[in-house]
Image (cartoon, rainbow, N blue to C red; front, side, top):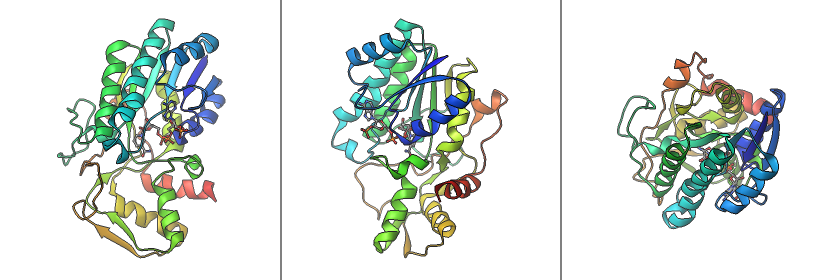
Length: 285
Ligand SMILES: NC(=O)c1ccc[n+]([C@@H]2O[C@H](COP(=O)([O-])OP(=O)(O)OC[C@H]3O[C@@H](n4cnc5c(N)ncnc54)[C@H](OP(=O)(O)O)[C@@H]3O)[C@@H](O)[C@H]2O)c1
């Protein structure tokens, strides 16, 4: 079965490649330079050449704060991109698996969000991702939407966007005080765990919205502390509130996701985030 992997230069796509290969899929990865998902003609050219049975869209505009000043750029990639891919999938009879985010929720809950909960995005980035979900789903029924949180993978070391783990290590190496918010809850999720789960989901033919994360929850501050504990560093790490830590985009205070639809398919809960972080550093080193 042929899979087209868009945004193949990103950290999740890089974790997916070996998983898909190991399951016998024939994978055609296209990075940003090879297929800009905001250009329908380019998508059509790639579809005609590859003739994929399924598309996994890992391409995204992920700069949450910058999106506040660049809504057109964020919506082009995160909303129009999935729409164009869904249209192409429909025209060619291919399944679409599209990745979204916990930030579609407003964070007012104190219980893990389920797939059936009503999204209320607080930022341009979040609104663009929710639009992408809606546009893809409304144009093509053979569509999986997978929301995840706090993603980090080995490729984040070299990708343009990086990830929170690499940012923390870079700040520690610079020797400055590190201020991290201590009032936003999430589940750090390893691309190494998410990728095989996506491959399983793809084979299920049970289309719809899924929440997929490691298990447990923490704050960004405690996530940072766990990172430094594991690598044996002790930079000056300061907890701050979201109010003190001024950034352009609002983030949800609580955006832990219940993996209810995934579990309902009989699939096992993904490992605790702490175990996955330990495994990540074993592989990174
Ligand atoms: N990172 C997180 O914490 C997080 C949390 C929740 C959900 N997610 C979602 O998970 C998915 C994967 O994220 P990730 O962390 O793997 O992202 P990533 O490492 O930033 O990769 C995204 C890729 O998309 C490419 N891209 C950007 N614009 C494009 C365009 N117009 N056409 C084609 N490719 C384009 C980027 O290429 P260039 O760098 O060359 O532009 C990059 O290689 C995304 O949908 C993201 O929204 C991520």
